[in-house]
Image (cartoon, rainbow over all chains, first blue to last red):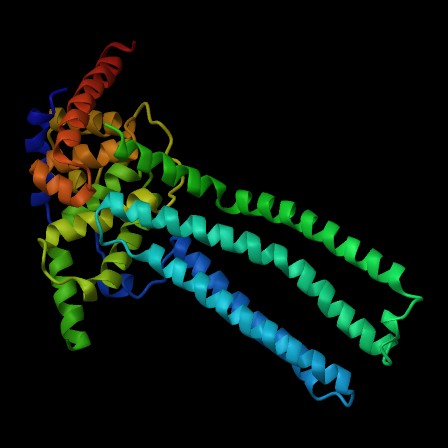
Length: 203
Length: 170
């Protein structure tokens, strides 16, 4: 097959008007079904869910009569603010991946580096959630059962040691679970992008 | 710019270049349903990017960039390697052309052969068939012209071998 000879047939496809009835006005109002758009929608859903549920728990602690619980609510507020930073950073990375008007090679490079950053950030933040959760449980437990700070007395060091060990084991376990889950979600996409980019970059 | 004016301008420009979008869809999606999906996705991405189009490149160059970026990096389902092509798998324009058995046969062989190529090779072949200069192809794909020439020669060899396999079954 000589491509030169096929150019004429290929060009004839341009002369045929339209292709079925396409209502472009309706089409441009549709939701994108692409993977990045889906990830963005999932992230927004996660934000709404967090604001509602976390907000309720925060409010419960904040309006409590106990001063200890109110202290915990400030801790929760700090965590909440960190979560908002986490959300903004992830959203920014996804938005960067959606720009597609550059040349193919540049677009793939940006997509790949943004996705790798996204995945690393997801892994680290998902893993750090465990010690934060243990810390939160520690504060709540202390306020509830040891209102006079007796948790730090001579009788309780074994409990603290066990709690710390559990936190470490759970954190390490969560790291591997997250890594496996992230590979399941994004592993194929990242491999494909690398493969295509490698093909473009090699001679 | 007034959003209605932008909207009308966009639709007018894209309607003029619809055959190009359909060709991209036919290269990267074999099933009708997948082609419609890809077409919709490309149009949505074009509309999303249109406000930032400054006219510093040709509209067709800009459109090709977005269409190919969407088709190649959009994580489409792996298309099966086709050994035969039903007429319904040819681009819609082919059905609307006056019937010519030998032309339809050549077009079918071309699509079957292109289906065996990688995503990047398909893009290069398509731009070559569109008579784009190597300079324009570099602008669209980001591959330098020397590399493009080398890749194009390899692609031509591959296509010859593939079509021989179709003809002689080896």
